[in-house]
Length: 327
Image (tube, rainbow, N blue to C red):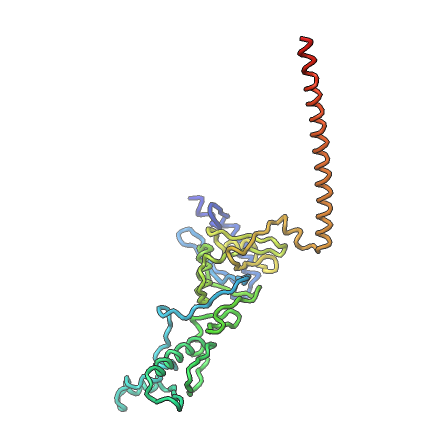
């Protein structure tokens, strides 16, 4: 049997035994017993595959931009939903006695009535097109307010229809796309999660996270960090597998968290440096004074040593002419 079948890759040329990963996975699932953060695993052709939700904390310093719904990815409600098109497509209805007309009438029962402003003519193609786009954007993004001067009246959407509309776009701490607040910075330390598997590398996880919230920034602008309670901060490489590393680090987020940070602003902190971060400033200043005194003592030792060597060399040089005369 190939040795790689008993190992799980966690990075470039980095492997961990499958038994070790399964042991950590068991502890991980016991910690999240009864929660949706439990992970599932299976084997395909001898390869261990783990999948589930991974918590990622926001650690951005610069604002991000939420993109508008992509036309190619726009999820249109089915004909039975209370959308603008299904409620106003009256021409597609059949005769009153036909079954097709009855079915269409049942589907389009929640209609939307648009009343144009009094100071404009009723037949205004520009206003109608603007109203159509505005209703469509407001149906998909509930927090976007329309600037069109129209009055919409109709029935309220049922909770099931609201869930369908929100399904394709998630909010960041309740923040949906809005023209006035499309650029903002998520609250530092707030948490979100993405559904990934153990075969996904760091860039792939970043892409899934950005696509979830429709973030316009490039995945290359961000990086994932393992931030420990001690202050140690380790940057995940592009070839690392975040889900497996999270399992190995343990489930407790009080000990270690996965943070999303900027590629150029994030900074790694080694364990040796992290040991001093938790101390207060007076204690750190006393450490600096002690290190300075030790440095001065070492400098004095070096000076005495080289002064002695200089004395020996000069003495030998003074003896050379006398020896030449003797010869």
